[in-house]
Image (tube, rainbow, N blue to C red; front, top):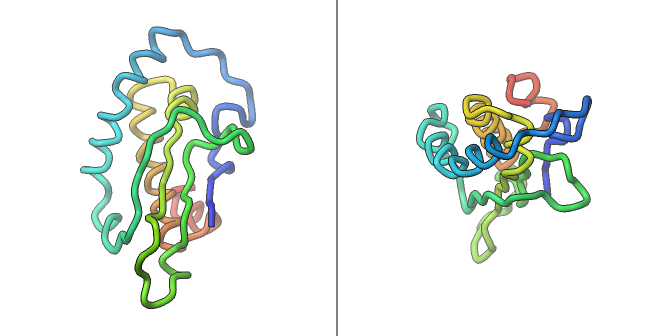
Length: 139
């Protein structure tokens, strides 16, 4: 199962964004991985509980068929796994650097969007759908 969140407006959705200047882009690109590390340490209590066989990767760009997404969960949600669950490759949460940077435009906003995207995709790992995420404020 692959769950992206195109409803979580990415850089090409809704209204066009002004191009981000090169210096700002490069500065945000340089701190991206550090922001991800900070966010992972400071996730709300309980978010990482019960995580099972899932890894997080940051890539520059999403696949061409979903060019506007900020992140995606690719795997089998915990709610759909059989028992026993062994000898399978890990599920993957992807973050897309360029889209997150272009959408966020400032370090503070980038940190917020990284947090929202990670929580959103972890929720998919736990079997929570987009409608419920919107109800919870993580859409």
